[in-house]
Amino acid sequence: MHLLYPRAVPDVASTLVFLAHEGAWRILYESSVTLARTLTGFAAALAAAVLLGFLYTLSPLARETIRAMNTILQSISVLIWIVVLVMLFGVLSPIPPVLVATVVALPILLSAIVSGLDNANPRLIELARMLGAPRTRLYWDFLLPSLLPQLAGAGRAALGAALRISVVAEAFGSGSGIGYMINYYYEYSMPRGVFAWGLLLVTLMILLDKVVLEKLEARIRRWATLPPR
Amino acid sequence: MVLRARGIWKSYNGRTVLVDVDVEARRGELAAIIGPNGAGKTTLLRILAGLEPPDRGTVEAYGRVLLVFQENLLLPWRRLRDNILLGLRYHKVPPGKRLERLRRVAELLGITEHLDKYPGEVSGGTARKAAIARMLVLEPDVLLLDEPLAGLDAGSRRSLLEALRSLARQGRAIIVVDHSLSDVASYADVVYVLSQAPGRVIARLELRGLAAGERVRLLYEAMFRASQVNAV
Image 1: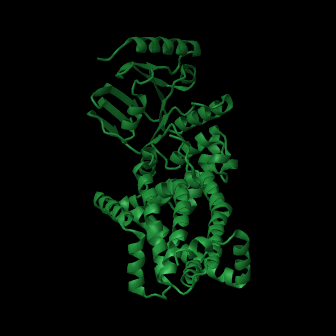
Image 2: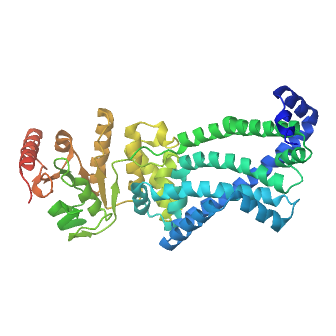
């Protein structure tokens, strides 16, 4: 048994052949499922981070609470989240991979927003005051858009992390997705399948980062960067 | 009189910046504040605008006082039109009136053709005018400007100065912090000269009615004294 895995590492060509035999529909379906879960989790994290950022500007108590919450979120191992969520929602539920993506992306996004708010250009705040902006508009009209360049960079990192971790959640407890496929072939001792789906995941991440996220980040930076202080 | 500051003192971290400063703004008057670097000119403007409290002294304002910052601070994600209308939205000015004010101010400053552009798409002069327009649509009684001509080319300086004169003629009080004595000599009715740090008003020059050469001579003499005098 101890000799099985060292000898079982497949070469690239046979891995690609294996993947081709899986069929385009299968590859497309499982990839879409994983991507959809990741994007849903990421969107939830983004919405939560933006909302928490708004609360952060309202009072010192809210600021301290959100800082503490972020520290706690960052301290909890992803393994704990996965196990707890699978226990809560069941092995075949699609919810754990989505929520895991959320809890992975949230601290990254929230940290970017909190740090951006802490270092916001004080002149921008004075300008808002001078224009008569109510406290609630200060965040939505001035601070949040000025944070978009930082948020775009953090979003890129957060989405990458969410995708990497949500497949782990799929492997632990799900009936579909790239993570499920990797786990399926692992349990049946078929290293070629593990490598094939792993290769697909890496390709997907690189494509997502280079073709979509990198360009999106550059565009947002050009659009929303304030002149230097 | 729409703005009167009396006996203003200000310190930061034990370092005195302003000493017993008196400044007044009158309707229809274009005043300038000049002084060596670090004399506290910007600090004085911020105190006049109510952005910072003085340590001692009083500021009495009889109307709306607005400050145009040295950095234009136009929001790059909004067109010039939306940047300018922002304050009117907060003041709940009806949409019809907003557009009327926008049209009037844009015409005065000569930026009508640029209103649909983003700040990154216009020249420094146009951006500066848009930043001024953003405050002007709020119809301030006193407009404070921190080095509005800095970094502008000759054409932009001329047209902006003309717009400021026109605003003063309309009855607004305008106070400008400026470094260029020749510019100040060309537009200012009254000039407050601050000494080198810590800043104290060492002269209030009334330039109205004086010949151009006399204005320049007075300003250069005052600035020479300002660089010699230490307030404390």
